[in-house]
Length: 479
Picture 1 (cartoon, rainbow, N blue to C red):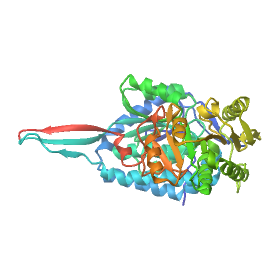
Picture 2 (spheres, helix red, strand yellow; picture 1 turned 180 degrees about the horizontal axis):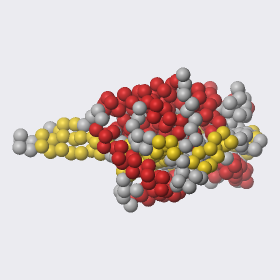
Picture 3 (cartoon, rainbow, N blue to C red; picture 1 turned 30 degrees about the vertical axis):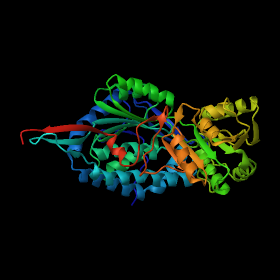
Picture 4 (cartoon, rainbow, N blue to C red; picture 1 turned 90 degrees about the vertical axis):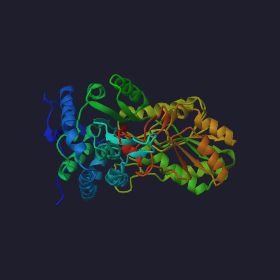
């Protein structure tokens, strides 16, 4: 029988605990503002306790056979499957996304648990052909130690599994600080991990509104050997600077400004469907969503009306209501940012073809803007809302220049049926990931990550576990 997975305490050293000073904070439904839970407001002292607990748990966890760690992860995976619907409903109530998307996220997030359980037994070293007859040269892969993971609210389940589980599979222990907007999903995952038999101290979850204070403990503590973070570029730079004091390894998945490039020879229907899937998932609150839609002039007169037609069918509502396509934005600050972005475009001469205003307290109408130029905020900055800014271009060279005209380099999308152009674009775009004729690129088996100011390191694929290991060269002489 499924267990009750919603928790109201933080998780430190295998124990459900409260804040030392008794402080708590409420978790609210972003659509209704209804309180759906309350959790401890953990401070610096408890964060320090969690790091010490993780450090104490590291040696015994690292010494386990890879198959032993994998067995625990497999049990965790199976428990997530059993509780998938409950996890999805909890996620929707926390962050507002439609239930269909939450269900898909639980499935996607659980794929990282499965992949990491499989890869735990494949974290190979290497034997190097020797330079001397009496020596043998080896490379070992050994777990780093304590990992601090800081995750965002927009994917409160999969951003955790994408970071935490490869670290555990590699033999590391973890202190996790989820977003204060969505701590319940993290605690539910911890409850299932505990049920799966994950030893005390191997995973710790800190719920807090003091992101700066707790974050500083995690990035400066000498027992933490790696920081992995998903969030804004500005915060990522700050965490990276703090981690430099003790020369920690870092993995950073930061802001994006994804171009979605449609050439004249593209399959029009497929391009519009790809744009819809990329742009409006989670109401545009994704780091890899289409932020700038670049359309070649020869197809623009057909692409724009068809995109508008598809957008007009989107229904706004509570995520648990059947038929909802777009939920609310996460908070008032997020709505205000989208409003500023739209107003800036209009002030500079762009035209709003549809939408452009909020819907109710915290949702925003699907918005289509044409005549967007590189100087506008919606072209230069991540909108993080259901706004589709369209810019028309003429040549392939112009498309490349427009796409690369940003300090960010996370994801890019290209629609074309020209094989030669596909290769040219794939190589010329300054992005860590390029989707060709698809608007959905994320998968546990592919390396997710960006270049330039969009981050460092990769999540997913066989490279994920390597991110949580040290490479040790071992020279054996006298043989």
